[in-house]
Length: 451
Image (tube, rainbow, N blue to C red; front, side):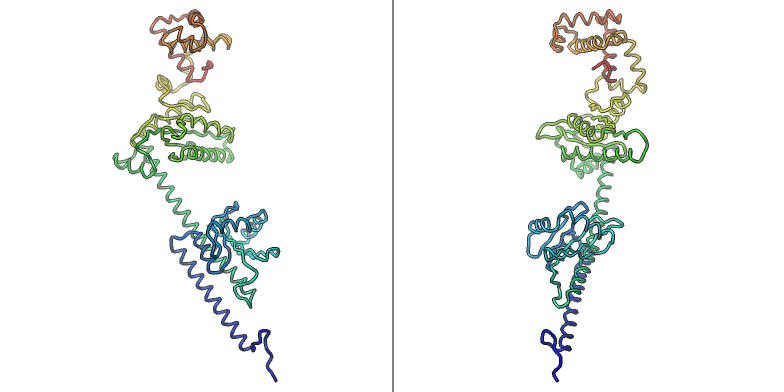
C-alpha cells in the first residue's frame, strides 16, 4: 500500500525534514539579524543605518517616522535614500497612519496591521526612549512571508525583527539625546563664561569664543532681551514666558544664523555681529525692533524690552557689552518703557540719569524745570517741548530748528520765548539752559511729553 504523499509529492518524513531545515535557516537568519542590530547599538550608528540593514536583510521597505509624521529615516531594497523617502511618503504617510501609530504607542508592542487593498501589511513598532515614544519603526511587508510554506511564522519573524530594530533605534536616539544634552551644556557653560568674563586669560577667552563660532574679524554687540510673564504666577503664565523666550532665540538665529544665544529663565542673551545680517545691512537695533513686533503678535500678554550693549571686536569685551546691555535694559524697564529697544550708545547723558535709583526723583526734577509748560494743553505743551528740543539740538539756531520742524524761524523764536515766559527760565543763561536740556533728556527717557 502506497504511503500517503504531501501536496508537493513528498513523503511526510521528507516534508518534515524540509520544514525543520527551513525553520532552522529562518532562525539562523533571525539570530544573524539580531546580532547585526545589537552591533549597531555598540557602534556610532544612526537610525538610518538600522533601516538600511532591515531593508537589505528582509527585502522590505522600512521607515522611522516621528510623532508628527516626519520621515526620520527610510530604506527600500536596491533604492536610493531619496527614492525610499518618496516611496514611504506616497505609500505610508496619510491621515489614518496617525491613528495606527497611536495604537502601537499605547500597547508599547509591535503590531501587524493588514492593508488588503494594496496586498501589503504594515508592521508598526514603537521606539521607546525612557517612558516616551518619540518615533515609530514602520515596515511595508508583502503578504508573502519570509518562509513560503509557513506564512504565519514569517509574519511572526517580521514582528520580532521590527520589535528588536525599534529597541536598537531607541538606544541610538537615547544616546543622541545624551550627547546633544552634553554638547548643549558645554556650549551653555562657554557662553556663561564669556558673559561673566571669568576666563583666566585672553587666550582662553578667544578659544571659548572660537568654539562658539565667534568671528573675530567683525564687530559685535550683545543684546539683553527681558521677557516678562503675563500677570499672575500661574503655571500657564510661566509656560507662556518660556515659549516666548524660545521663540525669541529662534527668531534671532533665523535672521542671523551666526548669532550666539543663551536662554535664561527671564532673559535671552544674543551676541550679534554688526550688521546683524550683512546681506541686507540690518542692524542690531532694527532686528530688536522686529523681535518686539513679532513677539507682540505671537504673545500679546508678554512684556518685552531690549537693551543693546556697545560694539566690540575682541571676545574679551563680550562681558562689557553684556553689562551695558543689561544695565540699559534694567533702567528702561524701571522707567516703564515696555517694548522699548534702547542701545547703550544712544543714551548720551541718560547713561548717568538712568543710574538714579528712583525714577520719581527724575520726574520731579523735570517737573520743577518745565512743569509750567507741561501743564498746558496737550497740543501746546508737546509743540513747545518739541521745539525747545530741536532748538537745543541745532545749537540754538532758529533757522536750522525751523528746517528740522518744517516751520518758519520766527515761529521757533516765538515758541522759545513763550517757554521762557511760562517757566521763568533765561535760556541765554548757561545754568538755565543746562537745566532745561537735562529736563528734556529726563522726559525723553521716561517716554513722556510726546518725545
